[in-house]
Length: 389
Image (tube, rainbow, N blue to C red; front, side, top):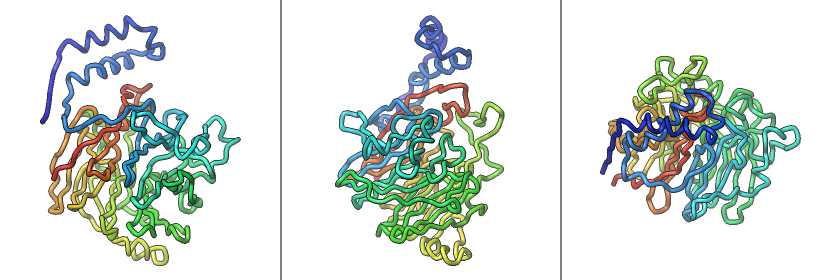
């Protein structure tokens, strides 16, 4: 099932090739860039791959979210982090190409033209896309370019009708819900379509509940220990602590989120954290009137993760950052490694297709300009795999 291959001399050869072809790498002016690029070329030879992981499509820009509709249509999103991306939300066509979705107009925002374009009806910085299995695509727009300050009137949830491919409704978030330092990260839609539940990985971290009928939203567990990063947890990649150029480590609050199949229990955890929490959605709904109703419960000890997904057997899939892999948390509380692949650089988001296939993105956050002078690995890819029975 697993294939490994190692090559000792390829690194120096790859580096030499890069140096000899320097005109093709005009932007790679530093030794760090040359070394990182060489390591990237060698990675497929020295890394561990798993034949169960199948490539679906590759992209020119950083991808985070993926979702698959009930009829098998695939959608992805490209956050406006390190660059002013030309497309925020796209449908992946059968040949692997992408098409702006729902249209070009919604994808017309550009940072350079932010004074000319309304953030109310354009995608500013899309973080997540979720198909609800009931005919709608939901788009989470925290509207914070480079994950920094939110753009005024920008944070919103957008509902797109998959039958007509037209925006059906926009749910704007006021500053008391999505403040200047907030970053709405991911969403889960209740099975009956009545509520949406979000994690906010910004500051302060928290959960957000949205009544999809009335449009009213409220924050829950905002600045609560259950939604904040854990000070004693260090995010590690490639066998060492991940650090920005100025020495700071990534401190991400509530990020990972999953909703039980019956819609009664919400699970979440901080990315910079090991503790997974859960709470009844009934309590989250009551918290709109009585904040004291929200009492989080510690559920499991894991590790820094990004994406979560619950299957029909109540197994929770976790994307594990430090080993480019996927692990499964069983109902018994035991975490079992499932898949590890060097191509899964920062495994990000899961989605479950109608035929049972699982899809996953690799967002390469540790390879981004947040942590280097430039991209050190920009092989942005959407993969798929068959989950264990």
